[in-house]
Structures are given as C-alpha cells and as structure tokens.
Amino acid sequence: MTAQPVEPVAPRDPGEDPAAIFETLPPLHRAQFRAEYDEALEAAHDLARFKQVQTLLRQWRLRAIAYARPGYEEAVQDALQNRTEMFTRYTPPEWEGRV
Image 1 (cartoon, rainbow, N blue to C red):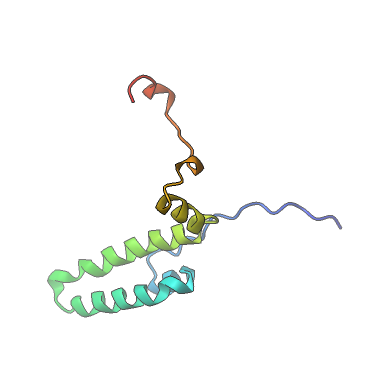
Image 2: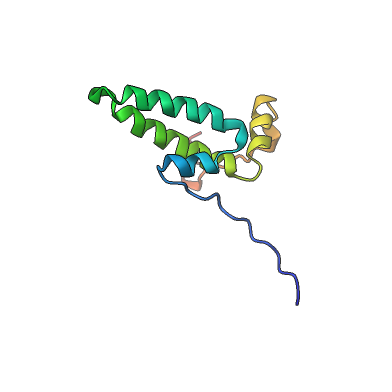
C-alpha cells in the first residue's frame, strides 16, 4: 500500500440550514452566530421582519465557508497587518492599460 497525496478539500457548503451552519463554523464564531440567529428568530414574529432570518442565514453560510478555507485566518492577519506582498495581483488580460 502506498500513500497518496491528499488533495485540498473545498469547504463544505452548509446551505441555509442553521444547524449545519453552526457545525461548520469554527468554535470561536458559534456564539456570535447563535446570538444573531436567536435575535433574528425573535424578530421574525413580526412578519414584516421575517426576511431578516433568511438574510442572516445567507450571510453566515458564506462566512462559514470562508472561515473553513485553509489559510483564512492567516490571510485575515496579513490584511490587518497590511502585508500586501502576500496577496496575488491579477489583472485580466483585457484590462491591460485600463487600470
């Protein structure tokens, strides 16, 4: 039996299922998600504010995917520390001379 290189795995998309989002989030972010979700549920008793729950689930779904990406925390720290040399500069060929 030989070892095979491990392919990077894309973060799992939890969809808009609150339990799946909660499980996908790193423990550091779970309390904030839960607090915001509970607040949105309470607001949803007013039908005019029901969309708030859907919006919150969409936002946290995207956050969960981003937080699960390898290197996410390092990229955030690079941005906060203004370490721009860590970022790849890409200009689409059709934009040459325009930017």
